[in-house]
Amino acid sequence: MFKSSVIIAAITTILMVGGNCYAQSCRYEKNVIDALTEVPVRVTQPVTIGKLNNNPLYFKAQSVGIRYRFLKMKYYRYEGFSINEQREIAFRLSTNEEIVIQPRINPADTVQGVGETISSLIVYPLTADQYEKLKRFPVTSFKYFGSDGAVEMPIKESRQSKIMEILNCID
Image (tube, rainbow, N blue to C red):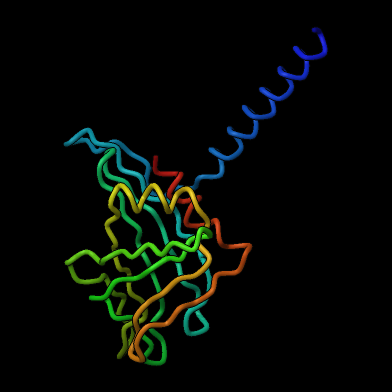
């Protein structure tokens, strides 16, 4: 009886400490209550899931209240490289299911350099179903549309949980 109580207490402590460690791994650019609307707004710091055109591909997650969730993708446009910002992107999950998300209708935010666009930030609204699946399963590949059509990029195993982690930070 005593041994089982000690084991249960030890397991409970490990789970609580483990859960707290996971929650503390969230890093935010913004984590505030909007003064006007009193709605919580969270934006994670960007994480990289791989490289496009030999430059990092970044994603960050954003929530506005409990209803609106977004993925924001930032990529670099050096040497004429670009992603079709009007087209969808897709994530292949570890379950082999493909989650396709559409960009927000507003134009992408771009950073201009001397004579060229350096980077673009594209916002992708998530439906409740897309959000739930992406935060529960690792992403094994990423598909985008470039000037040569659809390109599917495998994601290294060490980075497959990055999308899942940032989405869990905006709950």
